[in-house]
Amino acid sequence: MRKLKYRAENSPQAWLFLLPALIIIGIFNVLPLIKTFIMSMQKGTLNNLEFNGFKNFQVVLQDPKFHDAIGNTALFAFIVVPVGLIISMFIAITIFEKIKHKSLFETIFFIPYLTSVIAIGIVFRFLFNGEYGFINYLLSFINVGPINFLDDPSMSMTTLILFGIWSGLAFNIIILLSGLRTIDDNYYKVADMFGATKMEQFFKITLPQLIPTITFLLMMNFINAFKVYAQVFSLFNGKAGIANSATTGVFYIFNKFYVEYRYGQGMAAAVILFALILLFTLIQNYVLKRISK
Image (spheres, rainbow, N blue to C red):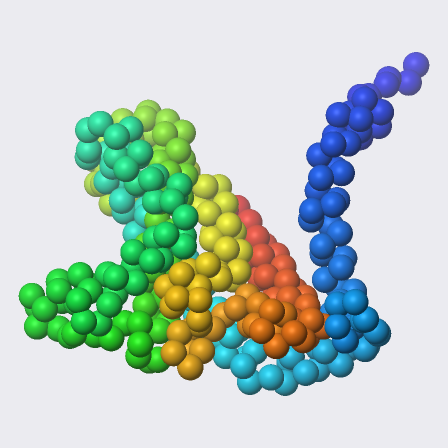
C-alpha cells in the first residue's frame, strides 16, 4: 500500500493561510521590482514612457559619476562590514564574559538601533563639525587636527565610513550576544580541564559555534551597506558631500530619478545595483558554506 506523505505545498489550507502575506509581498515587493525592470528600458516622462531598449544601461555604464558611486559604495561596504563586525564581536564577548547586569548593557547598546538614522546623523554632524565638533576636541588632546570631516572632499568617505561603523554596532552586538548564549558551557569546561587558553577557546570553540550567526550578519550587513543612503543624506545635510565626493549607488539613483528626472536611467542604475548585490550575495553564501564545512 502506497504510504501518503504530507507536504505543506500540496495543502490548500496552507496556501489559504499564506494568501494575505503573498498578496502583500506581491503588491509591495514583486510589483515594484517588475516595474523597475520595465522602466529601465523606457524613456520619457512618467505619464508618457516609451520603449528605449538597453540604451539606458549603456548611458549609465559609461557615466563616470556612476563609476564613482559604485566605487564609493564598494569602499564603504568592504570597510564598514568587516571592521564593524570585529568591533561588535569584541564588545559582545566583553559584555557576555566580563560584565555584570548584561541585560542593562544590552538595552543601552540596542537604543541606537531604535533611533532614526536621520536623527543620529544630525547629532553626528555636530560631533564631526570642523570648528566646534566634539571629535576634534578629543583629537586636540593628542595634538591632532582640527580635521574638517564634513566640508573636505578628501575626508567625506572617511567620515561616512566612521558613521557607518558606529551605526551598525547595535544590531550586530545584539545578534552576537544571542549567538553566544546558544554555545554549551560544557565545551569551555572541558577546554579549561585541558588547559586551553582563552585565545584558543575563542578560535576553537566560540568562533566555529558562531559561524551561522556571523554568516547571517555578513549577508545582512553587506546588503545594507550596498544600499547605503540615509547615512549619506543625514550626515551631509541632504547632499552627497562636497562635490558629490561621498555619492553612493542609491544616491546616484535618487539624483537620476528626482533631480535630473531621467527615470529610465535611474531605474537602469537600480537594476545594475540589484544585479551586483545579488551576485555578491550568491558568491558570499557559496564561500561561507565552503568555509563552514
